[in-house]
Amino acid sequence: MKDRGIEVIQSEKDFTKQVLKSNKPVLVMFMAKWCGPGQIMHPSVEYIQKTFAERLEVFELNVTDNEALRNQYNIFEIPTFQVFINGKIIDRFSGLKPNAEFIEWLSNIIERFEKKRRTKSFRNIQCKLFLL
Image (cartoon, rainbow, N blue to C red):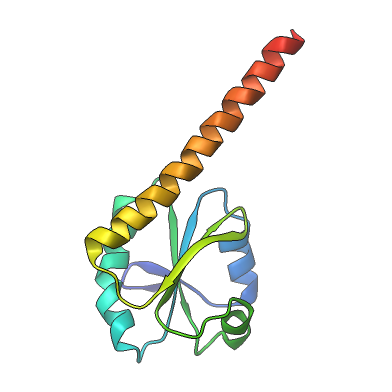
């Protein structure tokens, strides 16, 4: 299900499949429909989803409908944004953030992830060449 273009996670099973098992970095917006700051941040999240479409998965999770996940991920303020890589929380923030800061925050995370992936791939190639 999508909410204004952003895929909404409906269950713990969906969360595991779409967030924890993703090969890409994943941004999850923990929010509630009644939350004013969440509504303010929503256009920024949509922009980020379009801008980083090839490099980042973006999901929304309504904490009102998913109390177990809210508790598991220590969501005490909304909106809360968490970035997951390989099933682990890499970074998070809660509340409002100007669009430019939001983009810079995510860009830095994605660039570190991609650099680490390239380095790992290069090392694997070196090992294979050594074995030849």
